[in-house]
Image (cartoon, rainbow, N blue to C red; front, top):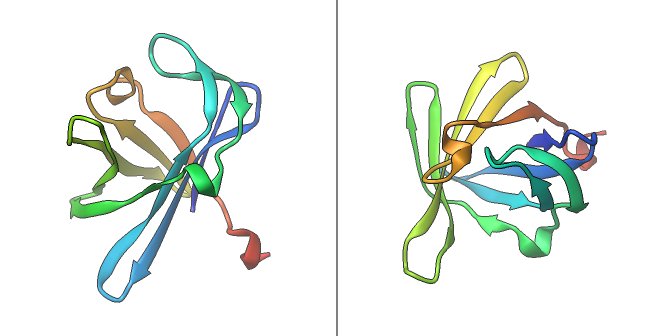
Length: 116
């Protein structure tokens, strides 16, 4: 599980990857946040919640980048994400075709609550 923290210290993003047989899936959940024009999180208005999470599909791995689809948009296209591990327990998430593609959200690997 990966988490993105906002500048106010609150979690605004959770990526929960799960292996289902040979297929990788899971969810990506983005909270309601106030951001700047580059997509950076300034303040969390409502934390990410399981009921508003996007199911991950069409996962592909290329070198050190994991690409996947999120929610289906009204026009039939999908939100596309790229997750890259950048160091020990650190990563970044790009939301393609948005300002976040050029300014990725910084993530840290977090333990799931049941792991404690």
